[in-house]
Length: 233
Ligand code: UTP
Image (cartoon, rainbow, N blue to C red; front, top):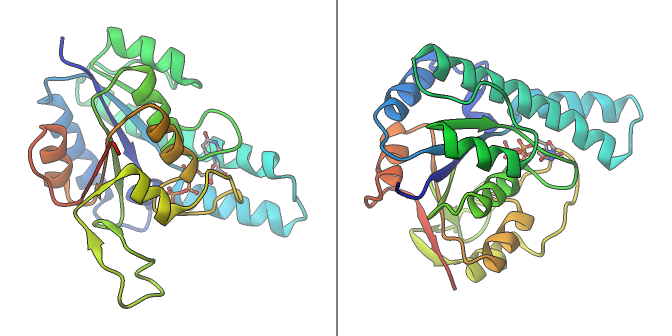
């Protein structure tokens, strides 16, 4: 059987305020029902994680691991939503939300799709997806987020930021910085801890705008896609 693929879905893709959310979830289900390889999906916490972490911080919680646990809970809620939609669409999804990558990889041997959220404090779901890809011997890990590319610098603050179509893992590390977990709910284009894991295990990545389902479709099919290819090196 072909090697599985792993797809990280940034929690921002499930924003409750986004009117198109149900349509987006149904197109995801359509896409996955036609996919010929098994797929591990790792869902982020998005607005639910950010709001809950912010509220706990304002109430005085300053233990990073405790705040991370709040974020993990949000990722699992979002993972349950995605899992249920795919089950309802008749897809062979593992019925449960694994809490570690080893058991998720094992379930991926037996099912077409496995959906999970976070695992333990100290990183984000990007790192979980990359770890799952390594464990499941996936050919590539796709990171679907709400920006089109990895940029040379933060486009929100630098108008000269340039989108990058192809780069190496070491170049990506130069942009995201050293592998440290700064704060709960903190956001870089990809978790630097995951980038380090990809470097250590020679795992290529793809970063793309997950709001555009055709980009996910192309990347899953191994075709050229709009986004950033991150190759080993
Ligand atoms: P996310 O994966 O959504 O991270 O997890 P993020 O980078 O903050 O959000 P996106 O990628 O921009 O959507 C939310 C938070 O949950 C905790 C971290 O605090 C993370 O920031 N978390 C998540 C963990 O501690 N461990 C995990 O395995 C997953």
